[in-house]
Length: 77
Image (tube, rainbow, N blue to C red; front, side, top):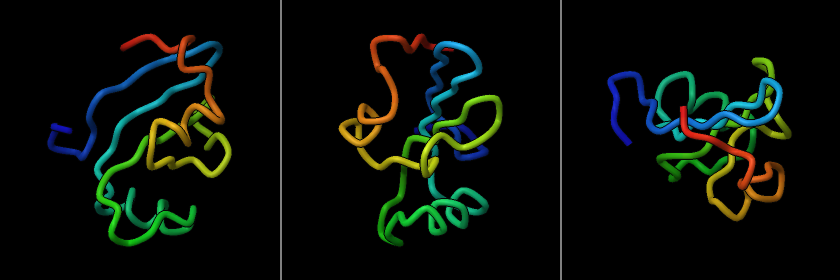
């Protein structure tokens, strides 16, 4: 994952759904900790809909992500 703000690849879905691969540093680390992501995890998928977290917001694997998002409906943005 690249980018200077810890942001990597992004996808969009139906409505206002957004998925971003993010490095868990700074504010992302704080929010991920509240979502139950263990301290040793360095990256996750952040899922929002209209700016609000979907479910717990941060998902550490594609398998977890697929439980809350229809991956086939996502398009790169």
